[in-house]
Image 1 (cartoon, helix red, strand yellow):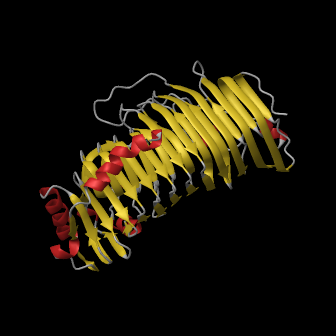
Image 2: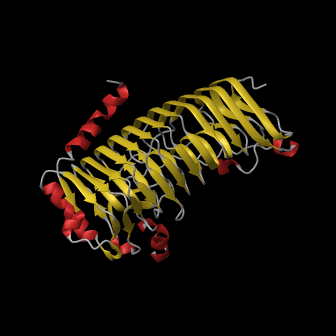
Image 3: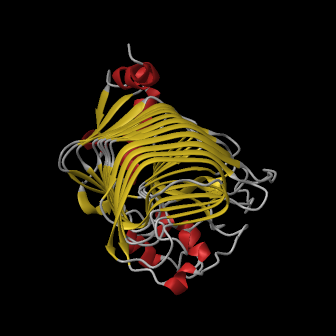
Length: 439
């Protein structure tokens, strides 16, 4: 048995075990008209399934208007083709379980579909979960942004399976996996542009997570790894995904208290990344290391590769102590192609804390160019405590191809690049960084 199958075996076994009993929500009094709330009968079907030892709760073709639903141990919610779960437009119909603070400081936790401290749980099938996020946001009063519900949220769960479902228009993050262990995510189709903070999949302080063949189009980050707790995010694989984002397609570390280790990303198509393709960040004290990225193509967007080691040093859960500045090291990016408007590669640590051991090999960049000599004289602020985003350094970069500051152990080989327009800036700008050949 391969290593991958060994990692996924508990989740696959759990999926088999929970299919022994089946419960159709149609036997619990649902109306499925898309107008009358079906929250109570669907939750009753889930609770009955739990009481009888677990199994599969089937949702047949129909439109089911619901507020918060809670999955529980040994239950798989299966949406048949033509089944649509519609999120209630009334914010009062949602509950917050295990709240936390995200990177901007907002307290979040409300969710449409959630599971907390559960084992052997899943959502499968070819149906749709539509959060009707725009309607929810329109109904919120001023100052109630913290009540925006996630579409799906799993907290401290083990053996989680998410397969094939289509997820639409969350009011905030679409899928939040928090402190979970052994998660299998495959063939999700996500489209969410209801408002701000519309992330696709957020993997938060989780271990043994496999994401494969997902198609994601979001207003915010498509896939984001983060650690809002002291627990690490490690042993994560992301493969063969098609991603489109109005922010970053693949990001880690906007919240970075716990460490990141052993992350593998391969075979992905970054169709559009308005702010950035690959963003690896640690700003709250985490050690981010052993990241391998390969066979990735970015078709359009701004900066293809952005690495940041910073000193914001925030915490996101009550009672967590602040940490010292973390470490960003042992990063390998190979067989990476990108077409982009901005500079190709930006790496920036902070004074006294360098990014370490970054290997870039077989990189092909097609950049817009057009930079001026005046832009080449730009001095970027250190912005030690700032939120980690490319805008933290201003609008202009002094390098056309590579900007590296507070970096050691940078190795670049087989770097190819072209510019659509002549660029008057130097190809590379190195500040407190080892020299590399980019000619």
